[in-house]
Image (cartoon, rainbow, N blue to C red; front, side, top):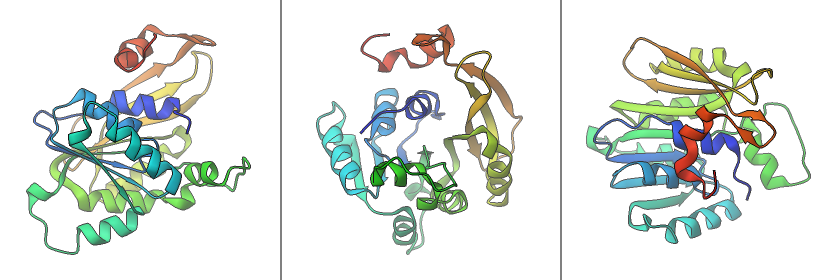
Length: 226
């Protein structure tokens, strides 16, 4: 399966508090974000959830063939099912995740590429934003951070629902493909604690296939050639 810019951005950008012990990647796909966080951190427990059969198999293979195989595990489940089972018993704070990340499906309208699995991965009907945020609020540790990437046009509504779950934005990076293009994505980090919000902008390319210095600085550790 294809690795997209959104996943690379989130894997490189996601906030990792000091002494991060456990990480959860929701809707892991190929596992690239979880793998990047394994490379970036010493977290002992990095778990992923993936519903699609083919993506789950690919994610598991990628985990097993990585240098961090002993720290990575993928569950073959839907997020609602995972949350229900995980929270069925009273959880201690130590059972909750220090970091949660998700590159969620984001097309709310019906679209078709001719590939059923790809369409499901792109349409938020398979993981509605309200379901995602409600589940995150139950799984994230009190001092934890949730990082995600969503369409810029969804930012206001997404933040409003997050705040209804007591998750507050602490950092936002708005992403443009190039300097003259419209803002396409929002990288957002949330916490249960209200803090001064830090915002900035990231431009990916100066021109086609010519990356900006800022994008290179953020992602160069994850490319074989950059």
